[in-house]
Image 1: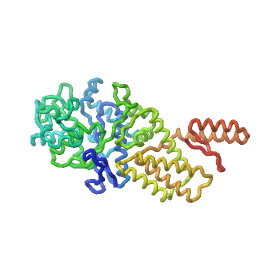
Image 2 (image 1 turned 135 degrees about the vertical axis):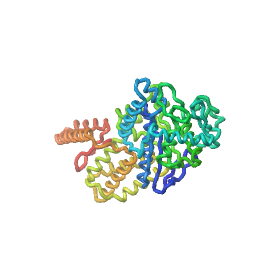
Image 3 (image 1 turned 90 degrees about the vertical axis):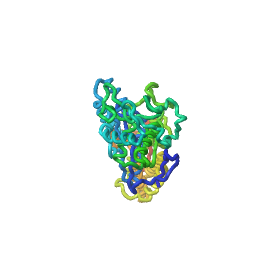
Image 4 (image 1 turned 30 degrees about the vertical axis):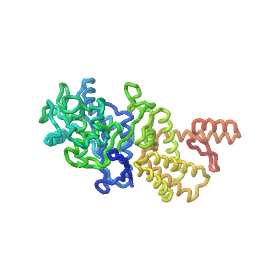
Length: 462
């Protein structure tokens, strides 16, 4: 059975969905004012993997990711570029979808936008106001955290210990840490009519409203980056549970930080990279490998050397898979080998989606394929085992997304290697051993291993 490290209980718990066979899942999405950064990409890829593994395990998953299309940063960008906030949001929403597709992330079931759910947000604020939990201060409506005895249960923070830097909002409030549900309109900003005057919703409000609309007042999994635990997710719980009187989410999951060269990613430090920038240099499979080769709750350090290693890894695994397919011919059978690999894979993945173990099983499978391909002759038993390993790699890739696609470049590389091997064969025929060995050594220096067999010369990536 799948176990999940639940941030709320601080325990690893057996996953039991509210509805048998169905998973309701919400993940905080982008604020669409710019291209999302590589740290966001880790979160999106992590929960793409979680969703795909749940589906692989037989669950039907309703997956919701919000689009924040009204926010201070969007307004700032619009003013800077001299265009409307709607134009900014529409532009970067489109770019968001381009990048998630490039990263091999499966589309969510729903992508609700904040501006399309204003009425539902107003209803939630009014409900809290009627209960005496929200109050109006000159058109700004705040959540009174003193009325929520459970406030801090997700993050473990206590109000008396909070530092000034952790204050989520400023303004005329009863308590410094009361947070805005509704913000009064300021000149030049978009606004909507409300019982408290023109204004716009607070950031935390949208996730409570849209998750409950598409998944119900209580749902299974809420995910996001570790930085959202407080105040964002803490405030979601407060406003949702005080409104409905019901538990908001059963399992809270948080992906750890991505650091750049051992430092927190920051524009001021000049180490800020967008996913778009990284995708121009490296394939999506290498990015996914970099993130998934570690458990999602482990911090990751982004360095060129690490993503280069990830790129080399996906090339080796893909090469073993492609060469195995060529040797196997028609992919069939292999039940025993497949079952053994998939059972080992599931043991790791069932333990809080431990992709570090899952990918180690993938490496073992690729290694076994290469060992089989070194044989001059494959028996029926060998072919059966090869087919099982290939089937396993395909199954694992449906979750991890680390096999490189067949491409024109790859085809040309294979064709080039065919020419190189013919040249080396010609040198050997002429007994020009010195040139033949030199060619072999040069290929090995760039990571291409040559094997002379009774069936001819074979090659693979070291």
